[in-house]
Length: 278
Image (cartoon, rainbow, N blue to C red; front, side, top):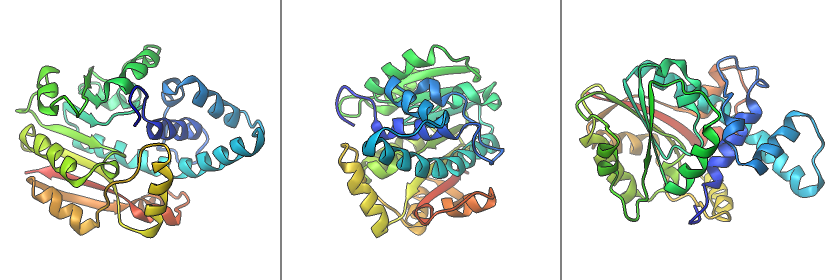
């Protein structure tokens, strides 16, 4: 992410969710918040897509193709992570690298839950301005601005009122692949230290492959390259090293198949692991 700007991958994720809302045959998917949370230019592109307007020129035609590919990925990814949050039923939810996540406004299951959104101050500033138009579904929402070049995650969470004596669900969606191993482990140390028994951890990550390397190179062009990849066994070892036991670890293609939606080759390299501190 470039200084002073919000994450472009977060914008792409929210755009796909906005474009899929009300348009996918997967009944379990809905995100009525995504369009509101988008910056104006991205919102306009999605609205043109939803209205069936033809793309203007080669550039917009390419953006449209990429959006349609991301829609296929975001539907099963979102449904699976929503289910992980519901099954945990924790009174605290910490979203690490929250981006333009809308769960605090769209999930009625969070009515008794305090949501802590951790993200860079630049991203949060713009999101808060746009989110003012939405009605909160969670019991409370606490923004936790963290610039990892100068702030300590544990101090920021404590200042926001996170209670380490109570079980927490930790959601780490679409962030781990952009971090080095040392940064991943540093965050997991904080997660372990601030987790009571019964806390849950859900991580979206990528497996090593030539295809994922190619995608990472493309994302590097917008300043957000992939920096890590794990096999399922490597991720299990990593999580167990911090006291969590894996409940399940599925590739996105399998999740998409269960939802009776189209799995692509790319989905096999994206995985979702859920774990519990026992």
